[in-house]
Image (cartoon, rainbow, N blue to C red; front, side, top):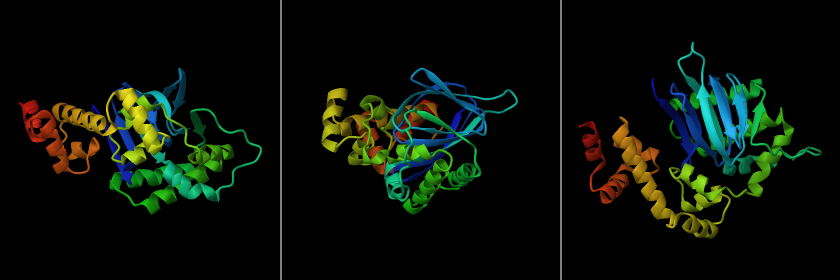
Length: 278
């Protein structure tokens, strides 16, 4: 393998589930704009959050709170051929659809930690097994299915840690993400600017104002440029096709991507690929 490989499914322009495999033990930054449920199938995941190490071992599950920023490092035993994990993104818009069916518990202190280890119950393992199946066979799913899986996840988590219902109720009072790491780690999401602002915990007008102050550019201009720069890097240094890179960096269709790419770099994506091969 000698690489990091990922398969994912998306809904409404957002990645909602993924499977990742790698045999390159490298540290990478992480930024989660939503609550994320992680199941490690092979190896060990080490999350460094605020200089505290959280280890999620083989066969274990963890919930990572939204707006968590840090780094991760994936390792495995010498007898294994790499690391593999599966993630399910509990995006606020889907939580909002189902959380009203779960009354908040009385007498529990709200959860404040960034990473919560969860027991490997039959409900949680069954959920992650179904996520694995969908990821391996689909790239796009419909909203009702993700709503159902979100409901299953909340039910499974609440059955072992009732106090975490307070975490899922946060959609009603969105926390404001640290803007710079949020934008730098999420600019490839193919969503509207209004949705992007909402994900960061801001109104559109506030998002535009704070973005221009932080990046000295408009969101549209900065995001487009970053997507094109990432696309050029992928075309130059990987074997990925332009049609795949187009979607990976957040463009809606190949024609729009190709026009934007040529306008920015003076060459078509295929010409960049030919130069890098030569």
